[in-house]
Image (cartoon, rainbow, N blue to C red; front, side, top):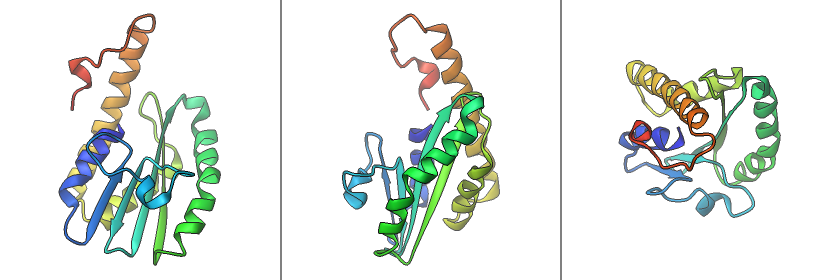
Length: 156
């Protein structure tokens, strides 16, 4: 899901923005945050506004607990980054393995609006994230006693 999000945000990058993601092929977020905190994705606009995105995918029963835990975990980072950037916005993207989003995820929509992703593309991104969660959950269930081999259904 993180890889898909990072690739979906790539077209929005311009001279005034930078994207950092904790996946291969992208600059690592620790370049900005240091080694103590390593959020999943950073989107920097005009060296002034920093979006800190943390993705969590887990069971439905833990959805709200995961959102609260991540918010608490990154509170100090947000405060530290606020010294260096005009605005720092935390995007707490907590979803279930069946594609259900927590209430906190509205900040993800706000981020996509702010960086200029149109509504049609936003709907596509959300639907694709749900699709990836469902496919990965099904694959993990089917192969729970085998090795993970990154099948074609996981390529996006």
